[in-house]
Image 1 (tube, rainbow, N blue to C red):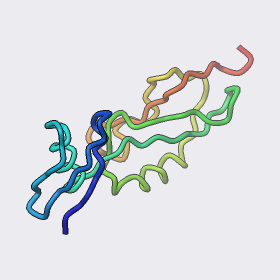
Image 2 (cartoon, rainbow, N blue to C red):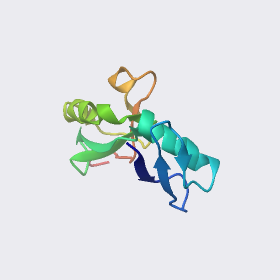
Image 3 (tube, one colour):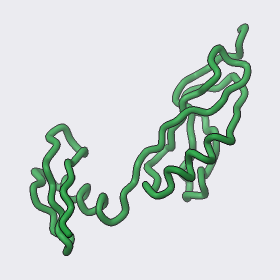
Image 4 (cartoon, rainbow, N blue to C red):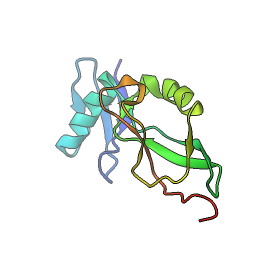
Length: 119
């Protein structure tokens, strides 16, 4: 059954159609072709969330994966993130968990810096 998608690889937002034989149509550039194939065969997403942080001015620190992870592992990732608690100080870009979910070098990283509260 053909799949219809809107490409998100560039601002054009082309309406793609990917047939059962993986023929992509509707793309205006090669990135649309690549996106259509990837989205149908092995979709991935960057996981963004927050982890608990102690000793900071706010109770949560925003985090994201350093690269896209398989879409089917997003809920596993959220379950793992719910178990994490970090301690201030933390800097944007710090690795919170190395090799997140054992996904071959994809890390969970902080996306905001926090000083130790009171400093």
